[in-house]
Image (cartoon, rainbow, N blue to C red; front, top):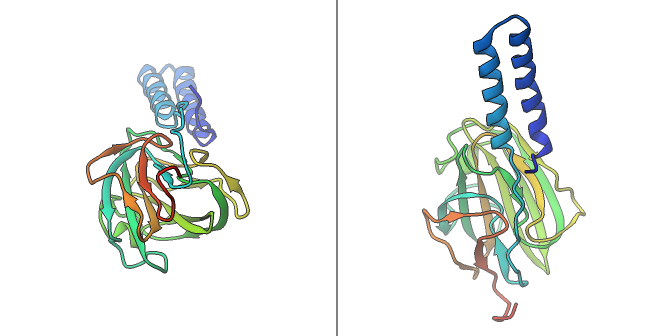
Length: 215
């Protein structure tokens, strides 16, 4: 299975710990180092996905996890405009590789420093450190945020302004538990509800307005 490149320094560090412990004869340290390396391999796993068929109206899930919000925006610092919001909470056991929800051109990538509140708290969307990505999808703006949690202290966003992206394409990873907020145009039909489990690149979250049943 593929491992996201962001994980290899963690795996390597754990193996160094195991090696040093082995050199000095510390069996418990070897075991702990190998176990930690195994956890990092598991956490940064990037399984192959058969991306769901898409039309111009389709919004794919950008993250694995559990839906927390599906409806009106919950925070005070949402992007300017009228939106529908879907929030996905990622536990440490979920795949943390993120995928683009719609195809288009990346028009904006912004990093916002902030706090490290538990990602499941409503106010975390406003206050926590996050990266915000805007995609122009055929004239419709789609916005999604990688938001850190109490454990996640680093976001990897590989999307760059001017990139042309496709739905389901990998664009980054969030480390050790976090959440994803997706902002969709008013009039979008939301197809998931709170507590639903979703899979990045596979689950269809919503249908955008302005497209007929074929697209």
